[in-house]
Image (cartoon, rainbow, N blue to C red):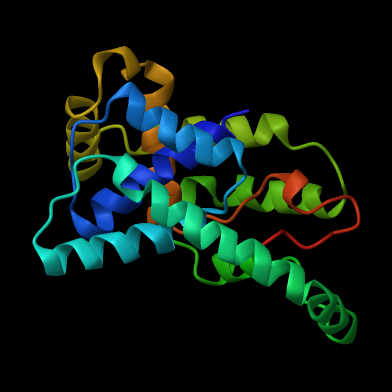
Length: 211
């Protein structure tokens, strides 16, 4: 239900955290980001495009002023990605039949390197993992995880500073509680490398997540 907001916020956080680029985000900026979401452009394509533009503009001494600055590059890289995907689809399928990847490798890696700061949630994460493997609903547990995770770090100075900067540079019409909450949650998920525990990512037969 919040995948569109997560997509938009992760792009904003990527630009801020990796390149320390912060500008006033207008409704037009959100429209650009949301159109990328509607077109189902993978995040890695958007991030690659942002990197290309930032590095190119930095050499020329140009300043990024909005997400429209990345629009052409995203379109170009995405079109190249589609052409490459069509051409390699057959070989990828053949490779998957020869060597099946462990669909739970990311979750297992998370538990093997579990962050101490999230110890209050460790048992609940294990419960969710077990239910995923049993093809059971985890909606209630995921809601609890998200609410508790945000509450654990409600007084975190670094996070609160980033949230304040984010909101200060956001158009007033976009400053909604749900946007702030998704920003907080995405920041924490990325910081602690929490994998996707949504069962839809795995499928009823433990299908692989799309890369």
